[in-house]
Image (cartoon, rainbow, N blue to C red):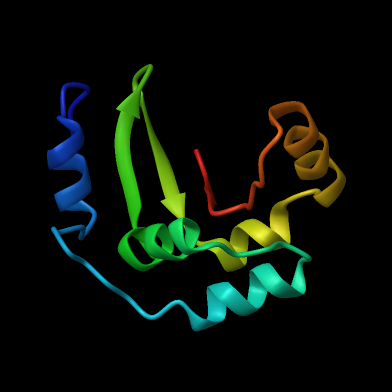
Length: 98
């Protein structure tokens, strides 16, 4: 693992490929259970990226970005999300962490 890994290399190393599509029923249920509205763009994103963990080096240590809506919903403070929805004037939903 190096600091100069390209975004495409990082994505493919994590298991992503063009037109990737994974089942997202559990993610949809977690979002609904957490009070989040799903929209088609969000669902398309989840189908393509759910389950991926992108590992990289940052400041001499391993770091990661992961996409798992179930885990993200469990970790996310709903009032925090609602505040940022208000600030940005758009819907938001937890999908992972960086």
